[in-house]
Every structure is written in C-alpha cells, then in structure tokens.
Image (cartoon, rainbow, N blue to C red):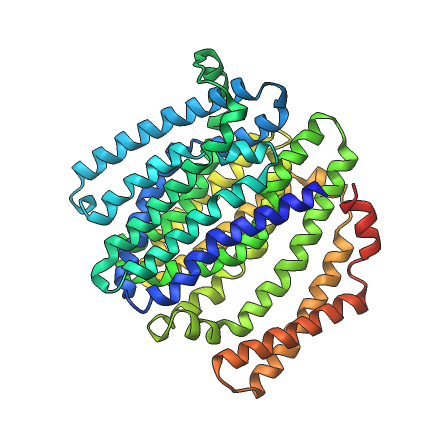
Length: 471
C-alpha cells in the first residue's frame, strides 16, 4: 500500500506542478501575444541546456543510491550532492559567459533564468524519492506553488509585465527547492567533504548524464531551432501545445518516479518475481490511461483550445493532433527506460536509446522547420519518440518476454477504439457551445470506455488487488 500512497502523493504533486501554471494559462494567453510567450519559451529552452549541466544526471542516480544505502544516508547524500553543487557552479559560470558573449542573450528574461540555475543547485528531491517519502515533497511545495500563482494573478496585468511573469515563475520554484532542506536536516547530518567518494560517483553519473543531454536535445532543441529559424511566434504556438501535453504526461510518467526506488531495492534483493509483477502493473496502468487519453483528446481538441487558450492560439490544435501520439511512446519508454534499463544497470543501452534519436531530431528539424515551422517540429517530436521506443523495445526484449500484460492491452485498446467511434459519431451530430460539447464528450466517453472494459473483461479487479496492490 505504501507504493500506491507514494504514487498518489507523487501524482498529486506532479499534477500540481503542471495544473497551477495551467490555471494561469487562460489568463496569461489573454494578456500576452504568442510572440511574447514565444520569447519566454525561447530563452527557457536556452536555459534548459545549462540546467541540464547543473543537474548532471544526478536525479535518477541519486534516487537509486539513496534507496540502496539507507544505512549510511549522510555520507551517500553529501558525496552525491557535492557533485551536483560542483556541476551547478560550472553551469552558472558558462551561462554568465554566454550572456556576456552573445548579444541576443542580453535580454531581461534571459537574465532571470539565472535564478533557475541556482534553484537547480538547491534541488534535493531525489533524496526524498530515494527514501520513498513523497508526502514531504508534496506538502512542502504545495504552499509555495500556490503563492507563485497568486502573485501572477495579483501583479501581472499587461503585456509589459512579461519580466514579472518570468520572475514569479523562477523565484517561487527556487523557494520550493529551498524548503526541502528543512526536513532533510535530520537525515543528512553535517557537511562532509570526501573527494574519493565524489570521484567514485562521476563515471556512473556521466553515463546517465549523456542520455539526459540527448533527451534535452530532442525535447528543447526544437524550440531553440524554431526561435532561430522561424521566429518567436512559432515558438509560442508550439510551446502552448507542449504545455497541454505536459498535463497529460504527468499522469503517464508519475508512476515511474515512485517505481524506480522500489524496483531498485527489489533488484538488489534479487526478487525478480516481485519486479515482474510491478512491471505488469506499470504497463496495465499506463495502457488504461494512455489509449483513451489519446483518442479522447483528438475528439475535444478544437473545443478545448478555444476555451483554454482563446482565438489567437487556435493553430495549436494542429500541433496537438500530431504530438498527442507521443503519449504512447513516452508511456512505454518511461517503463522500459526508467524502470527496466536504469535499475538493471543498463546505462549504455539507455544512453544509446536517447543519443541516436537526439541526432535524428536535430537533422530532421533542420529539414522541416524552415518549411513547416511549428508543424515540422511537432512531426519531428513524434518520430523521435518513436525511435526511442523502438530502441528500448529491443534493449528490454528479454524482460518484456517474461511479462503478461499483452492480453489486457489489446482489450483496453479495443475499448478505447469503441469509445472513439461513438464520440466521432456524436461529434458529427452535436453542435453546442465548446464547454457543453466537452462535457458531453467526456461523460459519454467515460461510460462507453468503462463499459467496454467491463464487457471485454480487460481488467480483473480481484486479481489486481490480490496479485499487485497487496504485494
């Protein structure tokens, strides 16, 4: 039951991280133009590369080591964190050089992202994830995030307030990270410098850092290239589609975060049967959510955007119709990469599955963006995720053969297709207001989908409770 509680805590926190900015989005998109928001997204994409260096792949590695070394938390924590601190210092130095040396980077928004780098240096969420203490992460950050959103509504009033908007985003993020040090004090003890331990961590961290570089390239490089090759307005449209997908991805990826420490511990104890049960549970949960989510979003896309973003961002519907298919690939790779390859120490395979698609993404963006703008970036993002999925399926083929989720997966897919067919017919005949349309689609879709699952016996709830949740 602790695993389920951790999943719910982490899910609620991840939803909070996405939901609060999303609450502000309808307000923000009616104050700022796509060019204004594209300016923010462009400099954010630049800062992402420096944030990557600051993190140095410590998050997953630190979670795994903390979960495996609970009898010596203090020394393990400090040796990992000091490596992170060194990386953050180096990142801030490089960012300062970039701002001084590149005239376009001498923009107020770019300068504000220095606070994000400091925030990354304070981030010790991986420590609590390793302890499987997701309750603290959730509660400590909730208040800070809510204060940040309240500040946006109170002080951001016109298109001239873009600097204020970015300031509130980065400052309250830093305060959230800082707040985690208070409950950590009783575990980590006094600062202890051990250069030998730091050097011991460098190689495995670098092996995880290289895939993070690749992931960042094919996640953030598209926005950077859009800004350079097509302009900030294209970045703004593409970024809004990305924000909406992140809400959906929160549900898809939250389970992987809480599974990593649990699976790492079970692998250390050589409990392979338990590990396979958790893999089957992960695939079952993902498939139950992903298929109806993708097909449902295709139905409500236009109505949702008209309400959520307003008439100036209607072109975002095109990007979402393309990019929504990323959910399937990301859901599976979250299991195969985070839950199978990393806990089993297959860092080289994980690195390959991210570096090859990153190169592919770079080349394809160079070809498509000059001609298709944000639509070209959307196409590239889907094909890149597909390539990650393909490589990881091959790398995890031995583990996948031992699993038994496939039978339920096809039934879930069939129930989802039944839902989509009914909703498509309904869409052709129902023409009310956008809000009422969505309410009808969601209500009817939920009834048809759940009914389909029941008729097809896609999920045996009794078996699920006995086999997975209790264990």
